[in-house]
Length: 138
Image 1 (tube, rainbow, N blue to C red):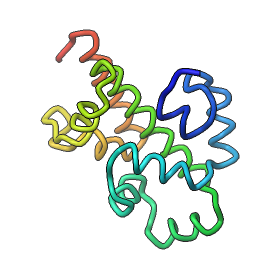
Image 2 (tube, rainbow, N blue to C red; image 1 turned 90 degrees about the horizontal axis):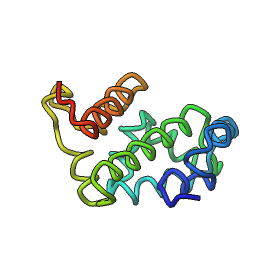
Image 3 (cartoon, rainbow, N blue to C red; image 1 turned 180 degrees about the horizontal axis):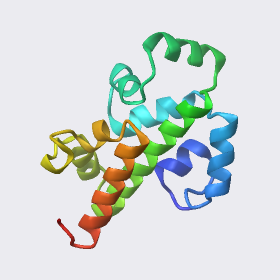
């Protein structure tokens, strides 16, 4: 298994889409939220906002021990973006964090993390990463 944030959070290879889908459908353990928070070097409140989870809901999830399907999906979405940004920046996780948190004009002044709050926004960020990797800037 390739060492990625996605594989660390889910316990399965980040390339195994079927296994990832199964993890989403069963709900990730709450510790996945904590691991994402640590990896992104972000506080609980800010990560909850990015994941569109209310603080009270997050407290409930912590007590139950699991995230719901849509919450698990968002956690994996952000983990995969971190992995893609790390690859883009040749494994430099600090540079990936800076890039993910920096406002970009091409994303209407939002950071890639902010822009990726929705599935559509996440696809925009993935597309941007792909364009940068291939030297296409328009």
